[in-house]
Image (cartoon, rainbow, N blue to C red):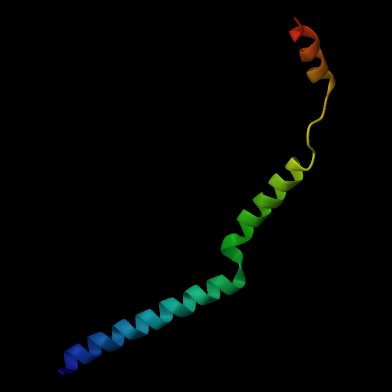
Length: 66
């Protein structure tokens, strides 16, 4: 093979390795998922409240009776 082909292949392999290392580092740090986790915890906290019959709801039920 020519020197140009080998150099191009070497650059490609180095870029591939560097990209894989960067992806692994990002996966291990967990920073990309941190905002999603915080949002999921917030949604879970809201869902734990469940149905609450407030004064506003009771007033609606009172006025909606037939």
